[in-house]
Length: 255
Image (cartoon, rainbow, N blue to C red; front, side):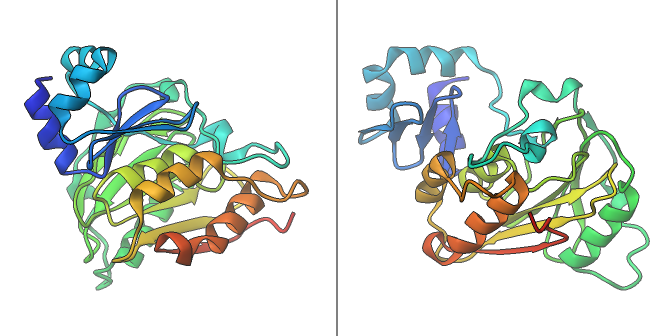
């Protein structure tokens, strides 16, 4: 990808990850999640000239993807941890499906809530991840079939991404990073392929602090006696006003 094309892409998002550790925010901050070192620049050209390894990655990458992860990461029973992701590329290649198939059977419910209901019914027994990007009226603009642990849905400005976790778990770290780094309005995770039926919904407000939230997610911790799902629920509720988002959940395990 040309540097100028990456710059345009960056301006349409809050941030773009160039490696597992490095992310470039749209104010031209280069942040390392492993070391927590911040480097600030006036423009992208200045940034890439000071970091030739980053420049090389950009020039050699055709498309930068955001994947929503579920699977083992979202259902982990590790106690006292933080947000994790399943990783591993999802176990399959994403396949584009017809968005129109998600726009039938509305029953007059033209809303995000109606789209969530339709999605939940359609994929309640799925053992792979699916994702749709819908507008405020619930109309799908994108419909993707993913793998066992992830699905790549790009979404867009003002859209809400709805996807399923075959594990039934709460948001993964990758889910929340996609929310923080893109112009999407919100993300929904529903459970499938499990008796535990939960739904989690996070939506940005006008005061959403994208960069601060992104960094906080990578360092999040919760009480050591909480499971992953309960801990994630506790952390997201506790920090909603601090970072400027609305979070709701149903069917959360009590332990």
